[in-house]
Image 1 (cartoon, helix red, strand yellow):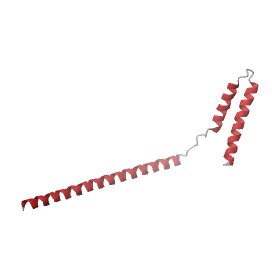
Image 2 (image 1 turned 90 degrees about the horizontal axis):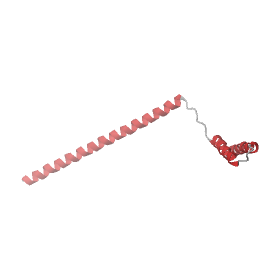
Image 3 (image 1 turned 90 degrees about the vertical axis):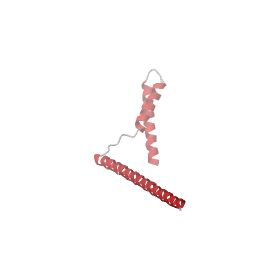
Image 4 (image 1 turned 120 degrees about the vertical axis):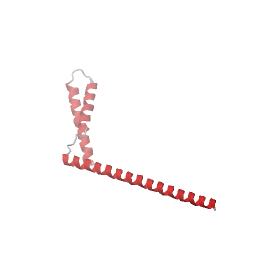
Length: 107
């Protein structure tokens, strides 16, 4: 934690030194340019660089995403089959109850 704060402090210090040097070298006395330079340099220093991702790790990630997608599809298919089975059982029970009711009415 402390190391991170030290790095940030050093970046701020470097940006302010660069802006201060510009302010001293600029003969027009325009502080706005020095402020813009400070903000720009600080933004550049605080940005995280894009990290290289090896093709193997990328393929592993893609494969994991495919597996997760396949698992979700399999679960969705099982749920659909279960709903169809329950619907069919309910329909069979309703038909059986209707047949029993008609049998009682005929007697």
